[in-house]
Amino acid sequence: MREKKMPVGIDDFAKIRSGGFYYIDKTGMIKELLRDWGQVNLFTRPRRFGKSINMSMLQSFFEIGTDKSLFDGLEISKESELCEKYMGQFPVISITLKQVSGFSFEEARQQLYSVITEAAEQLDYLQESEKLNARDKRKIFELSEGKGNQQEGLRILSRMLCKHFGKNVIILIDEYDAPLQKAYENGYYDDMVRLVRQIFGYALKSNESLYFGVLTGCMRVSKESLFSDLNNPTLYTLLDDMCDEWFGFTDQEVKQLLEDLNLGEYYDITKDWYDGYRIGSTDIYCPWDVINWCRQLLLSSDKEPKNYWANVGENDTVYRFVEMADDSTRYDLEVLSEGKTVDKTLSFEVTYKDMYSRIDNLWSVLFTAGYLTQRGRNPDGTWKLAIPNKEVLRVFGEQVRKWFLVKIEGGLQELYKAFDAGKADLIEKCINEALKESISFMDGGNSEEQKESSYHMLLIGMAQGRPGWIVKSNREAGKGRADIILINRLINLGIVIEVKHTNDDKKLSEKAEEACQQIIKMDYNEYFLGFKISKIEEYGIAFCGKECRVIKN
Image (cartoon, rainbow, N blue to C red; front, side, top):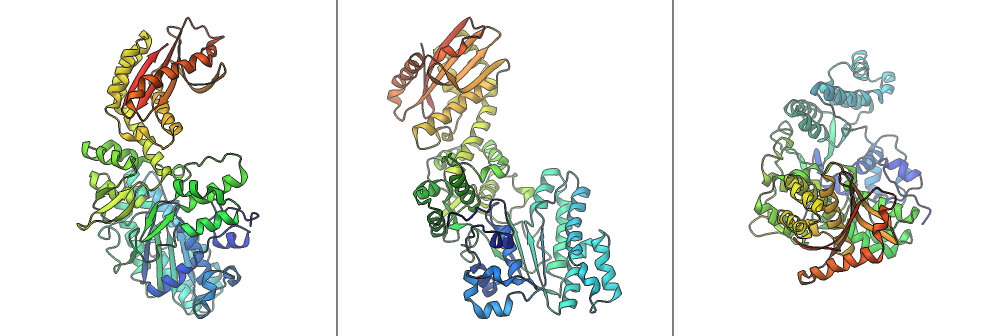
């Protein structure tokens, strides 16, 4: 099975099935959807959780003229009666709104209309239909030219397809809420809500040609603001058992994938980093992470896990959450960083417009977006929320550090003066005062290496805040690599810092002294040969939680 390729960035079902890519079978979703469907079905899942590939799979299954061999050997092929009745039996309109954006409402509206225009262009064959009259064909042509009644475009196209094929239409809308997110960010949210509400109302409610519709998105936008024109869409949220296993990979699927690729030895690390999500009653891995991780293991000598999911989108929501946190919320973050749960009320009526209005809303947003997951419900209706895995823990740690550095920026001048004066006691005092404002994510990770790296990056961030300092990290020096090198050209001062971590505060002095001895033993100060440095100072800095010890050679 090692010849199978990982479908990184490919969300076209037919391309994956025909192109020799590894596919984890999610076609069981079709049976469950047909068994329990409403006329309008809304699935909310975090980004990169397989929404687009599943929408492509639905299109390939239902669309008239489909290549039925794409489903050979898959779970749905065992349902012979269902396949005979539904496979390749419906006209399908499939669109994605993920790229609809713009700095102004007019720009975004034109991009949204262009999606409808593209859908109309794909129906050029209807110009030859004997079942459509000249007026029908003119409407399709106008839409394909970017003209006509764009707001009613999806309903018009549905009606034309229904007349041509004699069957009602399935409408698939992927990433339905993407235009609303961009609209909020750029200040035209209310206008975009009105426009999308009109388009969806025509397509999904006032549409006699509709068989059923499926929408996917990251957030369930409040029905009062968007779905007021629809008759109670059937919702499949992160808390629902129905269809809970069809987005993301289950533990058994990941085990099988790793075995098929002869990567079974990496199961534990894969689970630690990319599992941990709970959708309904099913434990789920982030599929984007797993696919990228397996590709890395197959093609690279680098076997260290990466933050794949976190790096494909902005993490501003986490930063804003940390920035807004009061003392109570920062205590909750401390608890989460220790792998424990916090009890919170979740609301699925939050709009993009309201998401930052209260810290309580942000708990729900972080959950919906995949930064938090649930570990069960309490008798009072609150949910036990947790950080799902090591990848997301690192995201929180990075954002906490960013917030922390901004928060203490004004107080760093005393630290810089202490380094200039070479006073270890003052350096220690300044760092300890800063650490009092920190959150335990500074001490992130399980291994000593990870913990040291966390404090290492913290010191780097603090040092980079001073104009005129040259800051180097993990540079070759003497017989090894020095943790931190600082050069103050104004006073020709060179500084070497070695960072250590301990879980025992009684050993802080011992660890700091160990760091000092390492600097001497490894001749790290040789880094400054060739520089016009008149003075070199060496510091060992040891950390334990929110306390540090600084010793100078």
